[in-house]
Length: 347
Ligand SMILES: C[S@@+](CC[C@H](N)C(=O)[O-])C[C@H]1O[C@@H](n2cnc3c(N)ncnc32)[C@H](O)[C@@H]1O
Image (spheres, helix red, strand yellow):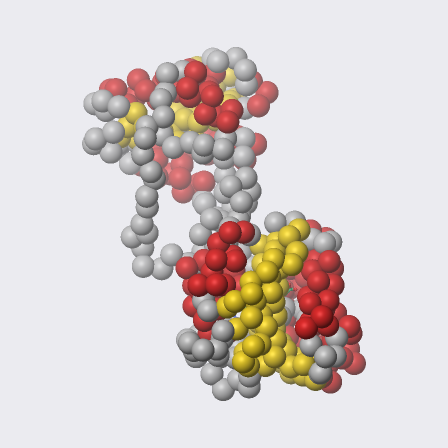
């Protein structure tokens, strides 16, 4: 067993190890993380080698006041042999050489095994709250899918059916809520309507006078038109971008706004409240919003914490944006559906 400084030639092996040990996040370029750590004079990346294979890593850095380390990883095949402890020790020695008097690191409190690992090797909890602020102006999270590209839009449609078979339960819940609250034919606006799956279910099962499908993707609108078949005669397709400041202007007021897996497409959770406030302008008095989207949980490392609200934040933001009677109707597969009614008095 040997611990040495990584070189750029180790990149592939390190990336494979970090993927295996689930240290990666889809939106973070680990290749860039490796390059930066090796190129910055006050940081490094150490690898543990066994028979020329990289089986462990740790990435220490000294900010001139405290030492930190990241990416502590040991190949699962070699865990339980004290190699993690050896890597921490190597990081500490490297930081001491730089002059760091203390080492700090961040651990999720919910990650009990990692908390135990550190407390067993002499690390103590510090009574601090982690606060943060983005220094970049544009903090929006880039979309991994280009919905304006037909092939990518079609791929999304195929994948979502496979990945989320429970979507149908959401379609049913949307339609049930509409039927429970409206007797006369209704007008509906769907934002981020995509392939029209929800639209078709509602048109088939509810008394709908007019259904407007709003989406900024021409290919998605085309897919939806085909999917609706004969139901398309009660549908209108609007090619609009709901991130544009005036997207909602000149729209006729509707009884109901529905949306599924689309609100997060504002690409940062800080924009969601604004979108809901804009929705108040397209809903008639006492109109209803049926809002469904993914939510963030601490345990799901594939969901970006800046993109998705938590379950608690979802209902809180509806109330804050001027909706009342907020009720959670369905919670499945880390997706939630809410019913909320518009408050018109303070528009
Ligand atoms: C994840 S898909 C969900 C589609 C649909 N609601 C469903 O569940 O089947 C998101 C949809 O939002 C649309 N979209 C993304 N950003 C948008 C924007 N800024 N304005 C309008 N539509 C947008 C995409 O084109 C895509 O059809």
